[in-house]
Amino acid sequence: MLFLYGLTILAGIANAIQPGQNAMLSKSLGLPITAGLITLLVSTTALLLGGLALGKLELPTGQHLAAVPWWAWLGGFFSVLLILAQLYASPAIGAASFLGIIVTVGVAVSILLDNYGWVGFPVHPASLWRILGALLMIAGVALVALF
View 1: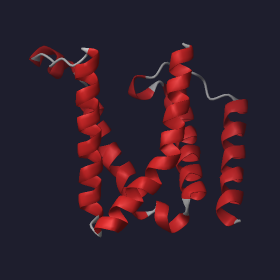
View 2 (view 1 turned 90 degrees about the vertical axis):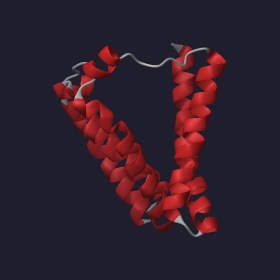
View 3 (view 1 turned 135 degrees about the vertical axis):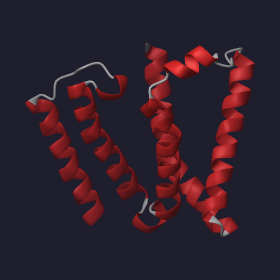
């Protein structure tokens, strides 16, 4: 479990750095959509090589593919949406505002996902404390964005 928390911390660090990297790639190339495609190509290559190195890369069977809920296929679309936001919004609003909004909206939506058990998450009720925490995050990100 400690490994998973460490991995999550590293992902948080990457989440803060990646928008700037993608925005710089876009600015340097002068081609935002091409920069997004390059980002996804690098991601795909890294995942492919990592999967091969760990011996964890397997092709799913037709039965496995048929069992996937329709909405589970939209993950790639949401990845593209995030990359487009990094390319266009992060340079304009800055790293702190961009990441603050991303994380805060993510937490607020996650409370709903947990409360109703949507998209495969186990149910965790939206308690008053969880809602208050999200409201405090909204206030905090508003301060970061305004000042």
